[in-house]
Image 1 (tube, helix red, strand yellow):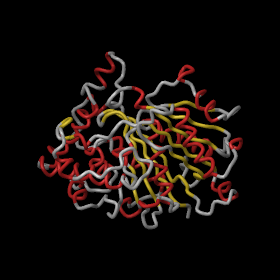
Image 2 (cartoon, one colour):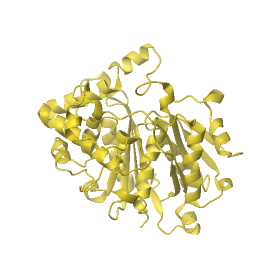
Image 3 (cartoon, rainbow, N blue to C red):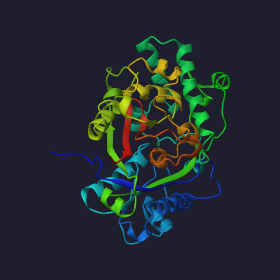
Image 4 (cartoon, rainbow, N blue to C red):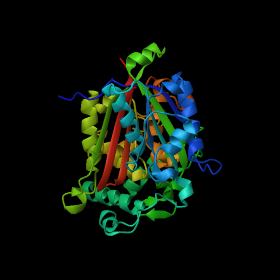
Length: 399
C-alpha cells in the first residue's frame, strides 16, 4: 500500500526574487536571483544538485519551450532538468516532481524552481488560450473575473447571504492582505488600502471590484530538497519537511452537469482530504498554524476557507469579518500579502507560498513573523472554479 511522502523529504534551502514589474531583467535573471538565495541558504554546492524541475506556466521560453534556458542560466550541466506547466498549480507541481524524486530514492538532492515574466505578455491578466472549439466549451465565461464572480453568485444563492454582507467580507479579505503586504519587502504592492477605498472601487465583475482582483507581476521562487538524514548531516537543526502534496484535477463534471452549486470548488475539497490524510491532520482548524491560499480574487479566498474545512459551510463570511484569518487571528492567511500583493506570475506562485511558510517556520519572517508556527498549508487553484486544478502542500517542522 502506498504510504505517501510524509516527512520523507526535507526542504534545506529556499529563495525568492522580488516580485513586481521587472522590466529590467528577463526570466533567466529572475531564476538566478531566486536560485542564488536558495543555494546559499541550503549550504551546498551547485554540483550536488542531481535533478531539477522547472515550472513556467504561461511564458513560452525559447529553444522550443524546453528546459535548456534554465540549465543555461543556472549553469547546471549534465543533470536532468524537466520543463513543466500545470496552469496555476505549476510551481507546486515543480515541487512535487523534485520531492517525489527524493522520496523514491532516485536522487539525494533536487531543485524545484518556478519562473514567470507575466508582464512581458502585454496582457492585463492571464492570457487566454488560442481560439478553438475546445476553448469555447471550456472557458465560455470570457474572462477570469467573470468566471470567478460566479462563485459569489452561487454562494449568495446557496447560503442566502446579502450582497452587502458578502461585499464587506470580500473587501475585508483584500484589506487584510494589503495590511500584511506592507511588511514584505519582496511584494509587488506594499501600500495599505482602506476599506472605503476597496468598497467604492470600480466594479470589474459584480461583486468584484478593482481591489478584489490580484495584479500582474514577474517573479521567481525555488526550493532545494533532500532527505531529513542528509539535512541533519548538513547541519540543519530545525528540519522543515513536506508532510503532504496533493493534486486534484477536474473531470469536467461541474461544467457538463447541473450538479455543481457554484458555491464551492470541488477540486479543492478533494485535494484537501487527500493532503490531510497524508499529513496526519484530523483537525485542521487546530493543527494548522498558517495558510497561503490562491487569492486570485477575494471571493476565491473566502470560499477556499470552507473548502479547506477551516470554516463551516456558509460560515466563512462571519469568520472573515470576525478576523479569524487576519495576522492576529486564529489561522493567519496570506501573512506575506498573498497573490493580492505579489501578483500571480503563474510558474512562481506555488513555490512563493511555500517560501513564506518556510521562513515562518524558521523564524525568519522579520516584521511579519508569527509566534511559534509549526505547520503551514499552501493552496493553488488553476483554471476556473468549475473546471480546473487544485494543488495543496502541507509543510512543517520535523518532530
